Image 1 (tube, rainbow, N blue to C red):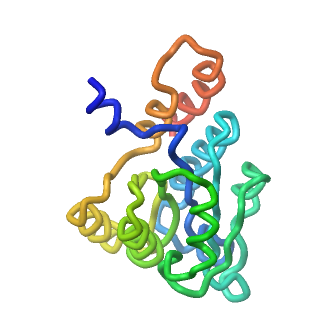
Image 2 (cartoon, rainbow, N blue to C red; image 1 turned 90 degrees about the vertical axis):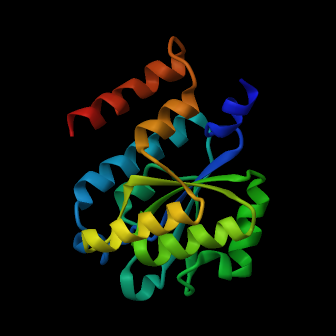
Length: 191
């Protein structure tokens, strides 16, 4: 039983990394409305469950900052501006996430085949347990996302969905937290 429990995402040892969901790029992402709803659900859950959030922004002067509706859901989140596609190639980023003190990372964002892939593989090389949330991640073209997911899975990253993350963070029904997050889950089912 402990072995199974260790394979579930722990809300006490995880944080959410939102990769480059930026104003000028987002409209070009395939299925962006679906992706943003899942980003919002995860960010809302983090706020209610006291799970740390970090946003990255790839060259915001050119691509814009994180979409405000996401940023507004995590006002205490840290935002890291980067130039490398792999955020872990930036020493300050590694210092930032090390200071969080958690070893599991739920990764969401754009684009799956560029910054998400490179950052996720970078996190893995720094011994983080990476959980890539596939329905909260996207690319401009479906094929790029599909191949990126195949590659990340073959490299040993765990592929998860928004509902999997939410229910693993909760672990049980019948709590106030479950009641607080149930509307988020219901909304996802309706989309």
